[in-house]
Image 1 (cartoon, helix red, strand yellow):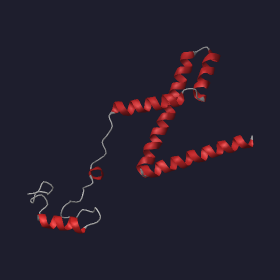
Image 2 (cartoon, one colour; image 1 turned 60 degrees about the horizontal axis):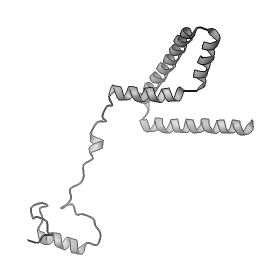
Image 3 (cartoon, helix red, strand yellow; image 1 turned 60 degrees about the vertical axis):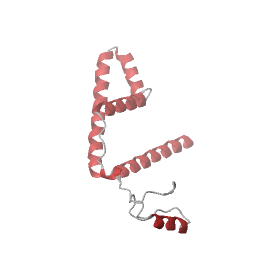
Image 4 (cartoon, one colour; image 1 turned 90 degrees about the vertical axis):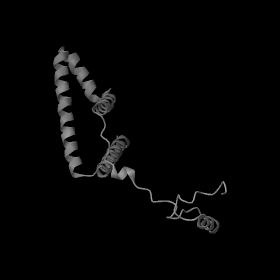
Length: 142
C-alpha cells in the first residue's frame, strides 16, 4: 500500500476508482461517494438564550453610556439645582425613565411578535438614516 493512498473502507469505493477520479479531474470538486453533504447545525439548533446577568449588564451599560450628558441628564441636573430637593427630582426622573423604558419594552415585544428581526433591523436603520438626514437638513438650512 502506498503512503499517499486512502484506506479502502473509508468511502466505499476502490483505490483505483479514486486514482481515476483524481487523474481525470482538473478541478477540486469532491464526488458524493467521497464526501457526504454537510448538515446545517446552526439552522436546526434553537438559539441559545443569554443569561439574565449578561442581558442585564449589556442593557445597563448601553443605556448608561447613552444617557450620560444627554438632555435628560442635563434637565435633571438643572431641576435639582433649582428646586433644592434633589431626592424628589431623583424619584421623579427615575419614575419617568422607568415609565419610558417600560413603554419601549412593551412596544418592542409587541413589534417582535408581529415582524421578523430582519424587518425590525432594516426599519430601525431606515428610521435612523431619515433622522440623520433631517438633522443635516436643519443644520444646512439654519
